[in-house]
Amino acid sequence: MEDDDLLRYSRHILLEEFGIDGQARVSAGHALVIGAGGLGSPVAMYLAGAGVGHITLVDDDEVDLTNLQRQIAHTAARVGQAKVRSAATAMGDLNPTIRVETHVRRADAPLLEELVPQAQVVIDCSDNFATRQLVNQACVRHGRPLVAGAAIRFDGQLSVYDTRDEASPCYACVFPADAHFEETRCAVLGVFAPVVGTIGVLQAGEALKLLAGIGEPLAGRLLMFDGRTASFDTLRVARDPGCPVCGNRHHGNAHS
Image 1 (cartoon, helix red, strand yellow):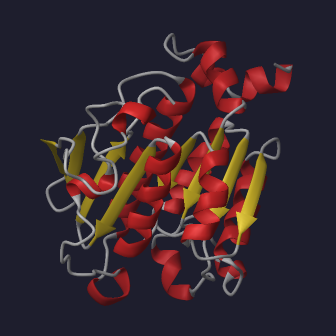
Image 2 (cartoon, rainbow, N blue to C red):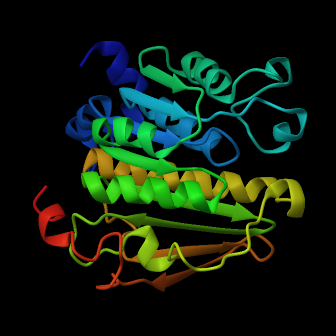
């Protein structure tokens, strides 16, 4: 590790659980971030700051004035730019030593089939149920841990879905694809800006823990955040043996 890297990452290296070995794993790591908006902005910035060596961003949207209330990777000067390119600019300004790969595309099944196997951890920062299901399916298929977050109004939620662990559910175990969830969007219902920041920062933390090999992942637990009262609740969530996505896959993924 170069002297500049030792300085740049010194506050992580000082952590006994993290150390030089943890930083080396982070620096050699590859994270795939789906969405570069309210959740994806803090995720991208914290992963960049921490020195994740290769970060892939996927988003087909452009920066809009209404985004700037909460999407901190973007600026007024970059309104109209592709979000992934705007975020990559901010990440490069923060840490020019990392590689940022951008895809101005929707995260559809063919793209996920290409990108998910290349990454060590996938962070879902998308804003719709259909994309979350596709991301989950790809992660289960390729045995990749998924850090999934969501936020609307004053409420946020977060979990890690890692079917390499036989006890860990996948996203579809907790939120079945055939369930009828009301599609909620910030453009319709609004969102308290610090809530997406809170959930995004926690997503970045879970991803860094997985890459560094430290701590206890949030797998098997669903973390709920209420921004009105600044309170957290944790629900235990279990694998569904009848889940059509992961129900018959856990033996193979446990050893992948």
